[in-house]
Length: 614
Image (cartoon, rainbow, N blue to C red):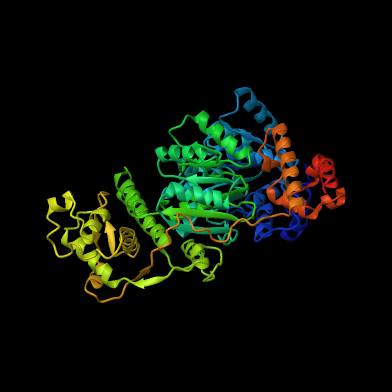
């Protein structure tokens, strides 16, 4: 569909051709960040590893070189839904692309293969399982190949949260097609995972492009669990009424409960978890992707590669098991660059539950140790009294990070600290005198002097720490224990039963050799205290009417074409249309996201709507 680049051209010659494709095909005026360098490097036949945040424009880094180089680009992607949506978006831009996966009927798969052999595609998306078959490898050996793109490359990591065994075999591409350039891309990779990607994909000579992992449009906000269902409801009603969002829960039962709760309160919610039939999961995911105001309540079975740009919030009702998982899950919000929220309700039981899951798993001890360290890092993130964005980016390996981001709860509402040295000593002493056999709930009963049947049974109403903490409420004690675990002063038992143990770090604290300052618990009794809205009002009343007209047209058009609404145009494009209100095709062509094919296809419809706007 475009004039292909002669592969012997130099980097300097690539840029104008790439910029032309960016503008004419995809409708964007300029490259962002390192996109131009990555595209030039790959278009000239070189391998690269790209680490770029979700929403940073990773797809263009291989889609544009695919249109510049001779041959077909093979894109390896782990999820069928992701492949289908990306191909639908490419079709809308006038690019010849196809999917080859297990959902296609035999006759359709054969037709795709015949077109592939005829080199009628610019890009072909395949799952790693299909790519690794002898039949497919033999098939693509018969055609010129532009490049290989390995998306979601972190799936190679056996220590990661999205491990796919097939990904570890993709080094076969280098072995069998050594002259074909490869690009591996991910939004989630700490330094250890990066090295594992390089080793497993044989990218030792590849150039590594690392963009900042910062997502400045996302506001990070963590609250203490009080009544998590009500907290979530109030959060959505207050900040995200009518918005698309994702709510993550740890258990299938909780997913069903929260879905029912939200629907009862007139929030359009759908469930997604592994206990549902594949057909129902696929149907709910399709509805979420195609419609504008759906809230998906899901376990972590949902989400990898979800390419829906207008998700305005991601909420967690249970603490994720690692910062990597948290970063990737929250990264599904605000892919269009508009403001979004990452919100979490978090409590002490989350720590106990996650630790129990680690210990009860069938994983090797080495994996359990790594998982425990990752959990401890996640806990420290939840309890930090410094900027959350700074903490998150430091963990992901960035060093030049500002101390204040101005868009997280800690920066916007700095927590107060208090000298909790004596209270920590009381807690540690209670753990010691009860034999390091009990969880936080029981220890709090002892500290507050609650003479329960269980306390009497163990005789702990007779020990010196019984009742010495009666001046503090349960909520404060739970916050103290939670922060002590985060500080490493206590740890949960290795058998996952929730009992708290002393650590080596607790010795100087217990002996009064150091002062311990903790975050002061929020004494505000409100279930949810609203900060400044993350999503500001976009329009005047007249503009709002035009916005609704454009969204209605987009929705009708998407239904006609059988694609998600955002495949037609992103919200960011509609927003620009509302503000600029172009009245001619020339003016319309300057709107971000409207390439030549879409201008020709939809220009008259848009001009008609815009000209009649008041």
